[in-house]
Image (tube, rainbow, N blue to C red; front, side):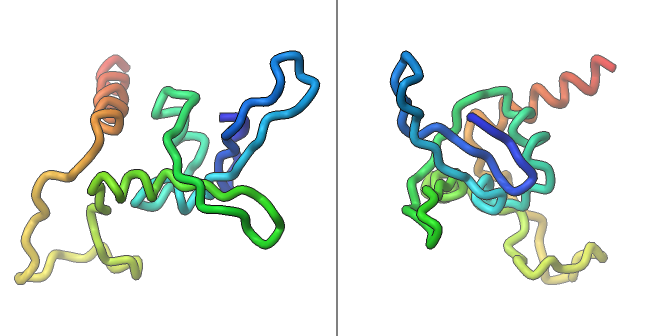
Length: 125
C-alpha cells in the first residue's frame, strides 16, 4: 500500500529499482472495488485489516491510462457475498414475513481475524 485516500487505495503492483532510480508501477483499487459491501471509510477499513499488502486482480487501464485493481473480484471469486443482496440501498425497516435471516456469512480467515481483533480492542477499553 503506497497511499490511502477517500476515493481508494494506491498499491505498488511492480516494484521499482532498489536504488530508487526508477519508480515502481502503481495502480488504484477504487473504494467501490475494496470489498463486496460498501466501504464508507477507506483509511479506517484498511487500518482495521492491519496489513500493508492486499490481494487484488488487475482490471486493466482506464481511459486516462491508469491501472485499475480490484480486491472485490478476489473476494467474489472466493464466494464472499454481501450480507444483503439488495443493491438499491433499501430501507432499514422491519423484515418482511417472507424474508428469513441469512445464514453464516462466507468470509475469509483474514476478514474474520480483523473482526476478532476489533472486538478484542473494544473489550480492552
